[in-house]
Length: 361
Ligand SMILES: Nc1ncnc2c1ncn2[C@@H]1O[C@H](COP(=O)(O)OP(=O)(O)O)[C@@H](O)[C@H]1O
Ligand SMILES: [Mg+2]
Image 1 (cartoon, rainbow, N blue to C red):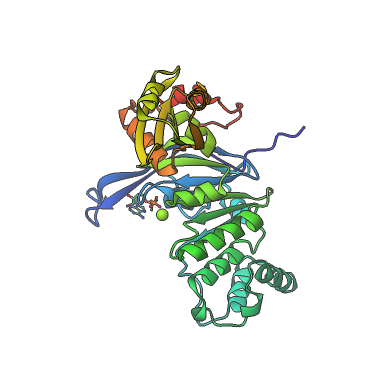
Image 2 (cartoon, rainbow, N blue to C red):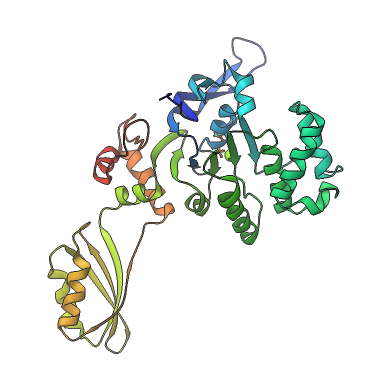
């Protein structure tokens, strides 16, 4: 079997910026800012990968380096086995880029004219380009507006035009930087649905940089949390969730039972705490925390029923990505420099949640 290189790989990728102090050497370089700090990432072909982090985390810098728009300071970035610095021309043929901030169209021209212009830059022959542009406009739902000057477009339409442009040369890898920036919630939802169903087709590798957790949750197979230029955690959302969760949490609604009986539930095996809130007479909401995987909830349900009570619902409380991010940031701050980076994929099989947790702490 031929060894297929990962779609994207970085090795200790580092980017520093220097503030300029003076125009003349030797004082030209001011204080340095480390925008990316030894990033090690491996993303396989066909993956939809989310780069998550707050503003200033380094997401755009990383994306720019990966699509050859910026040079790294140290380390390497390899796309499809090709070095982004040494083989930038070949890398460019393989990657497409969609920015959330679309100021790079000619607004007085139609989307059709714009795409023809970019096709010419990509040196796509006229006939082939015309066919591809027609298909792409159909694909992103802009076929009916092909002749409309782009300044009449809504933000959502501009975004779809940007996606069409990103796909113009049929890249194997698509980078999207904050793809739903500026969209209202409904338009963002629609765009995400489009990305999930049409763009991430299982063959194309997609890297989405975003600070919107729901976007990553909706689209991505795996995510990396990045902050202050460092990767704090990598894994599927499910893996991260179970790795970061110290205990299980459930909310139950029970009735026909008295409070004193409920208070004894906290003595059951594996139960850490039970907090009781009355909802109606003899109806309570229970917030239960328990040892991970200890099957404490079945014991609680059995006990409530044995005491003549009813269980109306039991809902597991999952960590939100925001909570996970906060935990990761906290743990990272506690870890020694260089520790706390966990890559679940790479060439090794995925780690179990327990192994991961060990890596995290
Ligand atoms: N061209 C630049 N010159 C100087 N500093 C920069 C430049 N681009 C980005 N930075 C700095 O690098 C850090 C990461 O920025 P960026 O990659 O844009 O973050 P993000 O996209 O996650 O919001 C920020 O502190 C930013 O100020
Ligand atoms: Mg950015």
